[in-house]
Length: 419
Image (cartoon, rainbow, N blue to C red; front, top):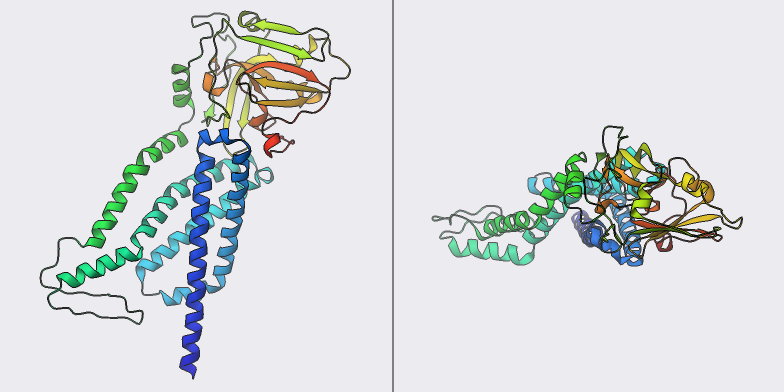
């Protein structure tokens, strides 16, 4: 009777583990797919769809944490069950390490406003590292554990063995096989080696590029942006855009290039900057005229809402408040709307926010013309707010009475963009 109870308990326990394992596998698959979409810069052009995918990624992450909490009461018994199965031990440790690491870093990235930027930066780096390790491992584990792989491995062994001697455990797995003429490599080992090789070839180059970017302090990548800049804004030497006021030690970190459209290209011949809306008279500058406006230099940090930061950026440009002071602004005006030269991206600041002395229309970074990929020739810089407020490729501003939701606010981002 006692033995029957023990058997039924063991079966129930096994079913729970299998069920949790299945749910966890599907959840990690969903997290992987949505994570890749969010990680790929070109996918930002999906707009509202990307926002939905981001929310789905968060929900799948919460489900993963719940599955972990459901598993924890079973952990002690599971450890006893596999105490002599070293391969399963290693797999369990790796999976728990990945899930816990993903969960902690994911919560910090999700609730980024509750943590200092340095924590969020560290969480993003850790999240990325775990993904580069975890996704290939899970793919490898999934393929090598497929039933047909196991069947092929067993069939190969049976075909090769002259004098078959099998030692079986309770779960009827083959644990020892002896034969006179063993093959140089089993089919299962060949499959494992093949899977590892394919993963290295498929993922290796992307991992190398990510690692190079993650370890770049800013100098190397920024130099690349300047060299490959496709804008034609009065090619150097050009004394009007050369900075004589460079201060600071240069940007520390690496900009991740995001855009919701194709990166636009500009030429100084046709470039204009327009100020309109609720002002006494609209103003339009060409590139030469815009460069003659008084400029200031500031050193500030640049924080993206997705978790990365670049520190000690040396920006040079026109202080927005000084530019607004030259205008005859209608009393009805309450907001400043910024329109990107890509024809799609917009955002706004209140007049009070626009009056902050560190808000500028930047034309130089670290003493060099702002490269195209970072929003050149002119971008808005709002250091105290997350980067989605710092509109790239700014070509016009409007003074407006009613609040305008910017591109990402329309797609779920908070209007409260303060860091």
